Image (cartoon, rainbow, N blue to C red):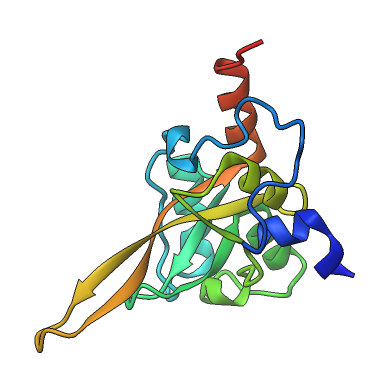
Length: 165
């Protein structure tokens, strides 16, 4: 059962530390990865335009975020191309037709250990930062802002550059 799986428990925030022999980087915060700001696509962007933007800017993937700030999912260059070439989507379709809506989020304050557990079963995680926002009548609410996208390669690069053997 996933409730008895320590990695699932870490990934979903129920456990903090389970590894007895943690690597040196395990408790370092995600913010130390120094990720660059992510390219964000709005849901009305067409598949054709998404392909052009991703290729022109040199990105493999980008989060799809509604103007309200709600994170809808992730679009990848390869999935968009594959879907269009297979006839499952048209170039003129909005990218919401080809997004991955199953994705993991991680906060800037979370540990690289938690990130490592997430990346064992996912190609990427969306890095989010919670921010308090106030509206005109003074009431407040928490809003998640996309800070970036992190992959296994980002973690591997950080570890190899900062290896403390």
